[in-house]
Image 1 (cartoon, one colour):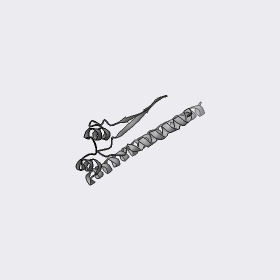
Image 2 (tube, rainbow, N blue to C red; image 1 turned 120 degrees about the vertical axis):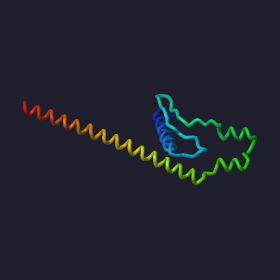
Image 3 (cartoon, helix red, strand yellow; image 1 turned 120 degrees about the horizontal axis):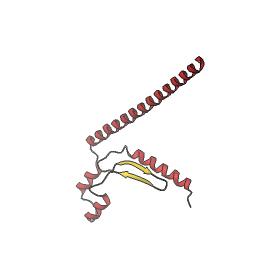
Image 4 (cartoon, one colour; image 1 turned 90 degrees about the vertical axis):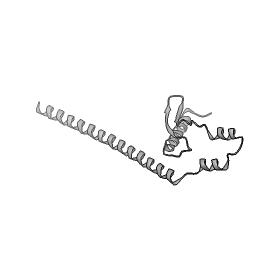
Length: 127
């Protein structure tokens, strides 16, 4: 029987794994958008696959896909690769900007706290 701690670490590992999947951009891979967690569940938010799954497509076809369709699903054009790289760069830039904003806010808060402490010390010394 698994302990709650073991399950928690497994959920964390799974969530971290899917965080990395956010960077996968391919027209035939369903995008991972995020996760939600409460005390009993870990839920994954995925892009809606309006055309169904590959399993459904194979079942509907009654066997292997025609060669042309299989090639279209599995191949990745240079244009798609370039588009993916651009999207990844944009995501990285957004993450860096968010981190810089967070760092700036933290520095401003620390400076304000230091100024308030200095003012309080000066007021106490003057009194």
